[in-house]
Length: 265
Length: 324
Image (cartoon, rainbow over all chains, first blue to last red; front, side, top):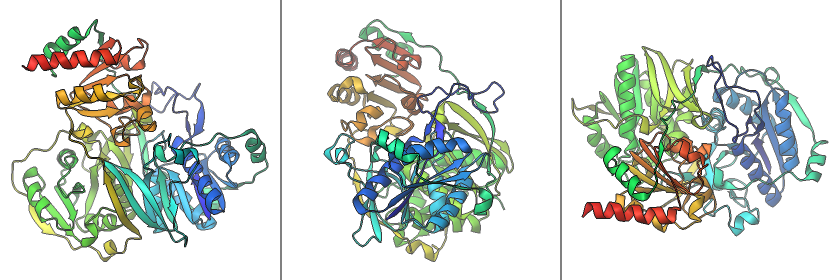
């Protein structure tokens, strides 16, 4: 089975994001970058499926040369090969989906797994655009009924259930008020939610091996894709601050304030 | 003529989802700013009842689309119908609430319409077709004004940012729109829905939320008891859900539910950025934590540095005795 996964480069989710004074973007100094956490879960799920069913995992990233760090990270986790779409300009979900479609047309995977959203623009759109343009099934927000501390998770069992004939797969999705199970026809697009799995760490031998794994370089031009974004960010600002609160000494004071001052109980 | 098209959403049991009324309010706001009339789409196996219920909520026209394929929601069946309807009525703006269904469906609709999309919209500004969408980025650490450069513009709205539409005013005209053939050809089949049943109000729709974090060590009895005393919903931090202590759908945060109740009580929650993104729109925030340095205190209106297992029963007793 050939599985394609994505590895977007994003700001470390633990970093404090500050807006530039002129609203033109965020302050980049001092920021660390990582693979998008939802994409890391996609890589992990791809590796688990490949381990169970046999096959290869191809990891794709779009961006300037720095994104090779994220590709190497996925290769160190165990991906077979990497595709780097060398593109320095701004991206939006439509242009990312257009580029990924062109890569998928070349690679012809049986399944593509993407993070449900990237933690920078938080749009949660790329997988769905991609599925529609490919005419494929989609299963967004893939999850599993077992917790991340369950035995199934410790055994690194893949949550996506591929049918014996390889023509379909069952995916459990996290939705409002519960879990939905879908049967998707393969090839399909799956996007990952947080509780699908706990991604593995890259081992030292994995990191050494990754240095010799191939990274194929492509560009929007070689893929024949116009990557001009259609979502234009006009201005960024910091959210309005909450006014400073007070610390109360005991529960009675808390109760009195909630009842008489805030009038919420 | 240009129109604003809002897509209604039913719960799995067929009842209207409250989030639809918030999406309608957002649609009304956009309709006033753009001068484009507000239309509503209702897709269901039998949409008549929902359409009848939605008539007094301010849409000029309600389009019903009926198909046995809509018995259970799947994007591959719903998207062709919404896109065909949007094209047929010349909709320039197509949106819905940012529920799990809305997030799954609308990018697929946008892809069919070759439209750019803004997710989780907090506000609209501008006039005519020149509209700016205000939306969060980096888990709400940044608020961005964005423009969509395609002729058709697709969006989801954060329901808590728009007060629910109220009934009153002229009844909408109801029109049937034929479901395109594609709705029955979905390569994706619905298999099952496992609902997490609860007697408490739904998290995103509750006026009071009591949430527990790692400080509970998985013991939610006091959280639940206070919630029941207040008629509140129960929430949780990501750590608690990941550990399997409570169901996933209780998670409040950027990666879970975004809530904005009138009162949010955070017990034993440190206040990671991703949790704050899900609750800092609440009107009044109470933080209960043993660690005086916990970041949750920076957003709390009222903080108490103490053990939640001591505070929660005392608070519940005080509320209980004030009632009697």
